[in-house]
Amino acid sequence: MSEKIVLLLVFIGLIVIVGLSVFILKRYRALKDHNAKKLKALKDQERRLEEKRAYVLESLRVLSKALSEGQVGAVEGAIRIKTLLEYYDSDLLAQPHNRLLLDIFHQTEHIPILNAWKALDRPTRKKYLDTIEEIELKHGEEMKRVGQGLSEYFNEC
Image (tube, rainbow, N blue to C red; front, side, top):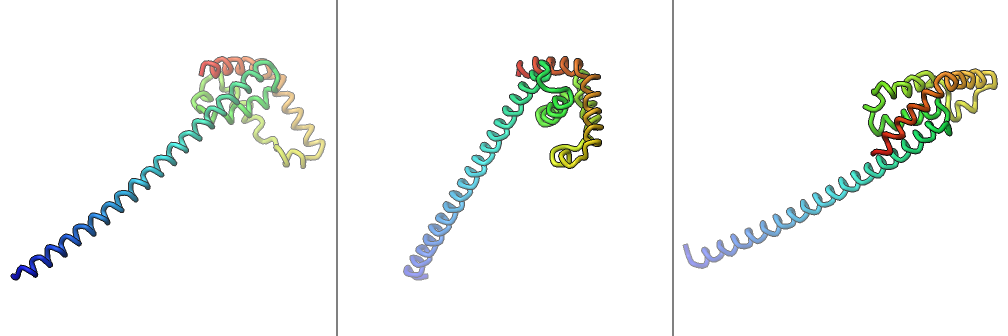
């Protein structure tokens, strides 16, 4: 082979090497940027979840204290706390001393809420209010104790 052909092939080889190097560098940077964005999104999601968990914890502290002091009724307290506990730590609901939360929730879950409550006629609404009052009288003091126990638990968290 002539010297010109060898030089031409070497030159073409160098161009291919430079072209592939540029391509690889661009792909590397794109992958690095993609991974950085993914990591940032994951950290943002973790931060939002931690903020939500802190908000739920604070809500549980306030509700359990209000329940223990009788500032919120047994039925309303049980429903609200049960719902928040399902998100925060469902294992707490399974503990025997918190079982009453689930019992009251199940006793009242058939009662309409919000717009459905507003749409009820007076006799039906009175029937439901009587049911709620009966539960309040039957479990009010016990729910205060449950609230006290939860309040102590959440203040330690």
